[in-house]
Image 1 (cartoon, rainbow, N blue to C red):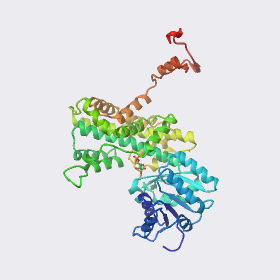
Image 2: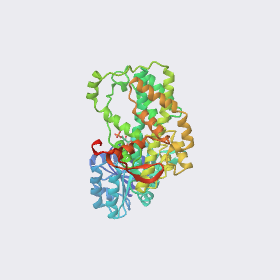
Image 3: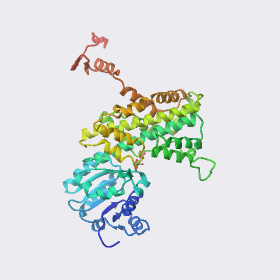
Image 4: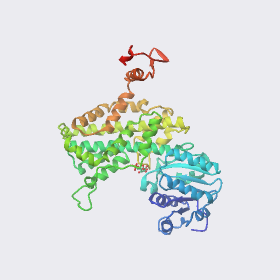
Length: 478
Ligand code: 6PG
């Protein structure tokens, strides 16, 4: 590299940081790298990949020195305290108008706080979701930036060059002010949790209900991936099921993996905020609940010895069940996206993000973990009606879901009969049935709350009036 200044800095030379650095370098951008492990950054800068385009800063001061002014630096460090620590370390060497971008999975409230802090110093801050894992970072992720538009403009070219592309369009767009980018990434992950849960339920029903082995299952997911269910997550499921153990190639690796799923927290944050904003996201809630339940491994093993249920084996027509599963998975997938989009619609209003849901769906079509063919019709639905409150109100989706209702019911019924847990499918069906119900039994809940707590209720024929009734006359009766 010449002694020219670098176009962008990256703090954190872990897998994601390194791969993004190579990706930026591939597109002709000079990258300054800093890692608290000095050797790590130096090794990357001297390596073959990205040669001539990467330069390591031994210290934060050196990083600041080798960056083009006004500076732009991307933090790729674990969410939480490390982000605050790096910001505190950078600030003394950075100037007004310099830009710090947090590319991790930070909680949106932290992003709001950090933006305030840096704005007060005259600096710029941007919270930016990045999805696509290692491969995406290297070859084209989906990028979800939020913050002041002037910040985005400063790095727009480099982000557009490095993001995934679908139909020639980069999977990146300025989403809105403040923490909008991190909020959208959080919901992306919430949807990711929901979809992983649904796929795992289809796997369970076919494995324990139809006694299919991993290789047979791999074929099914591979077939599904060539149709309406075409998506990254269905595709990798097939790859995973086909993978043989290196120690014993007669075994499928999946059968040797412990049935306990961990989590970093973005799914839980999605559910929390959905509760806060009173937007139902039962598919995300169910997915978080199942990860938590999977973690109670010893208890499950003990209870499985004493609490018996029905025979898991399905006695009906296997091909028919597989067909219902495919159709139900599509319906429940749409319901999961529906809940995520509805949450973003409400968050956009409550937090002033001004999100365009068409744009969100558009940049999720490539690069990210939840990329799927269905995101194109989702994009189109919000394109037709930008203020669409719920995807199920869209004619296309209400028809598509309507025609798959039978399969969804059949899967929920079969799972219940076989004693196989399917909370993702059940939640999808309950959401669907509740959402398409002009009447719900909430009148009884209103009356009960008024009975025991004088919380008042609204009558149908007296809208806007809140009444209380003494449901029992005498005190000793209550
Ligand atoms: C992505 C992923 C990424 C990561 C999740 C995993 O978009 O690239 O979502 O962010 O894989 O954080 O989250 P859990 O550890 O909570 O499952």
